[in-house]
Image (cartoon, rainbow, N blue to C red; front, side):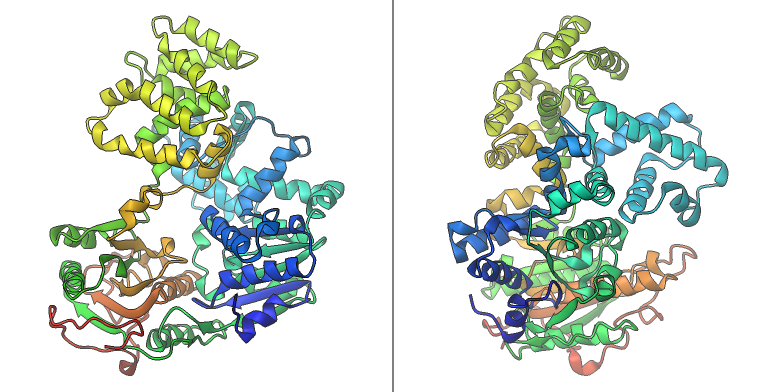
Length: 639
């Protein structure tokens, strides 16, 4: 692997605590791989190195490239997400953490459980927040290490007389999870962090397993994750890579200060920059650099293009989002006619909602596309039905899974299913539970037969899913009118499961890191335009990128107005969008009605919070485009 001087300085550093501020497209993944390879070459045992990322896919890519570079001796290197690292340890040492036979709840499971508990605490007319809002409050408070009561009183609009009822719901939620052997996302990190902080001997045993911890996307860490890193910092070297200008997940609890306060929190820490960009041409980077300079925050980075010059970005303005969408679709169609591939084009939208006119225009123009940023495969109803049957085998106390599974059968409603599940959960083991179920629901012989058959394939996840799908097809055909269309998703599920050795491992992997259908179905990715939300676009790139609806109301989003920190994050969201382009960047804006969420007044282009209103004319081309006179660009971006 070849490295530039900045990358090499970081890779070979002997500092115990090092923060690498890697600008967009500057090779942060290559630098992490280079660091791991350097440590192995220097004699560090592979099992003493751990690499922590934010997605399973990023971890898999890093591990694959590391093995390709170094060879099989890199196999023992640990690579995974924060949740993976924590859960792996908790599985290996359950007594230290007080958990056994755990089932991981995804967001839909959490909402269902909270709804059940809320309905038992207050009546239907109650003005208490609904389950989704309750879950958001709880999750944010936990990930930012704040007491629930304090967070509710300081940051929410819940009336004081309702706080005790909300706290009771949270208490019962925690109790029910413990009784049923459930863990939600936040439990994994919180319990892991608590044990490390409160049990010095456990901390030494766990953190002492590693000499070097390499952390990707440092700007996306939240205070809870920082507390885990802080525990590890007492025992091993930290090599953290991130970009403060790409910190865009505050709504998940990500704390910008984990980057900007790195040196203060870890005395003796060093910060090194990566500023040579390998993705984009310089005219594209000039716009992105200008955007950061307008900020009051000290990003202190100016990206330089290794590729040199290219065509100027285009800025086009329209009267409505529909005219804008039609123009973008026609641009793509004409480029395709001129020889460009559909897959050379990416359309970046601030939200799924603002992407709707664009979707309609692509469909109308007959342009093949995939949308990323919507529902994941494991959130689709019929897939969750199949997984419910699987989950009852992995954890027979899984109340939510049993309720969903039983209610697929004709004649079994919520009351009857609930009564059967309550009796069954008192059973001492899985087999006894099945006996209770058959006794309580006589006449439904296949109810227990399906889980019993699945149990015989626990070590063959793909076969288990195939078996469940075949056995449950009559139920699912009755439930879904479009079953023929839905059925193809089950083959994708089998392909995913084939990569795992147990059902429990399969469920944990994809519950912690859900994937969309398009990510699994590689065939569907060939020859299509990508329409994607910016928050889903980190790590992506394309030769030609359209950043649509780049006016106030979208950038910054209307809900951020009045909040300086939120507006600054919106600047970073736009920065991420701009820096996806390799050869050509086309920014479009429209005069559509974007409303301030409090006053419901129109936010026209040119309002005080319009990021691009003062964009220097010399950085972009303002001109009318003759749609079908497009000259395709060569690999360097020159016309």
